[in-house]
Amino acid sequence: MLTDSSISAADIIRQQREFFQTGKTKSVDFRIAQLKILKRAVLEQEQAIIQALKADLNKPEIESYLTEVLVTKEIDYALKNIAAWTKPKKAPVSLDFFPYSAKIYPEPLGVVLIIGAWNYPFQLTISPLVGAIAAGNCAIIKPSELAPRTSHLLAEIIPKYFNSEYLTVVEGGVEISQQLIAEKFDHIFFTGGTNVGKIVMAAAAKTLTPVTLELGGKSPCIVDTEINLEHTVKRIVWGKFINAGQTCIAPDYLLVNKKIKIELLDSFKKCLKEFYGENPAISPDYGRIINQKQFDRLVNFLQDGEIVIGGETNSTECYIAPTIIDHVSAASPVMQEEIFGPILPIIEYSEITEAIALINSRPKPLALYLFSQNKDLQNRVLQETTSGGVCLNDTVMQVGVSSLPFGGVGDSGIGSYHGKAGFDTFSHNKSVLKNSFLLDLNWRYAPYQGKLPFLKRFLG
Ligand code: NAD
Image 1 (cartoon, rainbow, N blue to C red):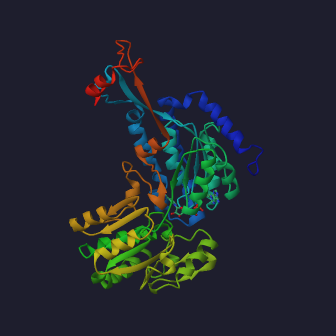
Image 2 (cartoon, rainbow, N blue to C red):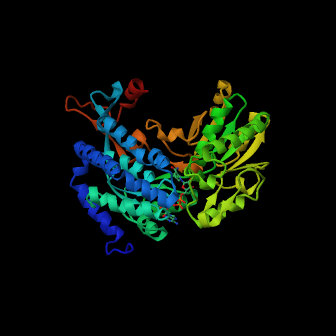
Image 3 (tube, protein in one colour):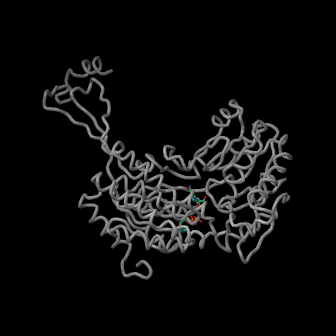
């Protein structure tokens, strides 16, 4: 049983399956109508969303607007493209197959489960939901219990705008999540840490439920000498310290050409003062760590290397100042796991080969950043490394481009979403081959005697 409720996960799924079987969600008009309702819901609830995020993460209003409310852009993109996405596509057929014709029909999977993380707790459930709706599915959403205000708000909003046999929110923590993933779904879309991703995939394997895993990792940020220093520093500071560093694609650590390190550090100091003032603890524009457990984990990293900027903490407020640590080695604890907080270690390199080797010696990251105007260097890094995505001369902005699939590779995830990729994730591409009664050649039918030489000449 799911907590505080007499209805079990199996019951909710059964109700949604019954609704799915009516075929209503398959109509493209229905999907368009639901996407419009979802957009209206986000816009009408904008202030409530911003307040919930303030309570959970002390998110400044502008950050909540840009990174969570603007999920409406994903809805607009889906609305603009849904007619093209849902249309069956002709597939070419070789002459040998005359008079056959072939088409690919995208069809919904059925009832899907979306499990969210706490760092962008609204957007990380609504954005996959856009793909699920566009593709014609029913969905159960399980937001993160660690952002409770946003989780409660989602549980309030969704039933106001949608029937529960179509979309529903199930609130709860690990236990509820485990009850859900033990059930047979048509797809599980999970956002969270790599270790929990393995648990989700293992549970899904038992019911042969396909999964998309949007995981984390240590995203490197290379800083070469051929840059505009001021722009580089602003873009790194923004991408690293937005949401107090609790962003899956935040630059995790810097790999800096040693010729530019001193200048870069000076520039970081100026930029941080400009962004958050002398004391970021009183800045209205700087967030907090989600909880004490994460705070304690992060504070341990402050033992590593030499703190050159920041380092101040306040346990009662879960505050950690924007911090930059120099003289960190690849073997330091801060370099062993995803930081997921406002601590930026710096490792210097003399030759780009060293930076590339370090990246390639580690699990494949979710994002990779390179600041350099040198096209050869850009091409080299693109050629010689692998990551979920890359952003050249900026950070984090790739997540906002709906035409780019968003997802990891290797330990940073399986599958992708946003825009068409989200639609595809929640669709099955059904291959349909059609013959005609125009003619019926005997070459493939028994008796086979004498037919092989002809077939070899004709088909080989
Ligand atoms: P998490 O893995 O701890 O939790 C994610 C969800 O899984 C929550 O809803 C939680 O209730 C559930 N869960 C936790 N333990 C579970 C278990 N044992 N069995 C079943 N379900 C369980 O992740 P988090 O702490 O919420 O988020 C942080 C991580 O998520 C970071 O690693 C970050 O990089 C990653 N992340 C990735 C993306 C992305 O798009 N790739 C986005 C945001 C966060």
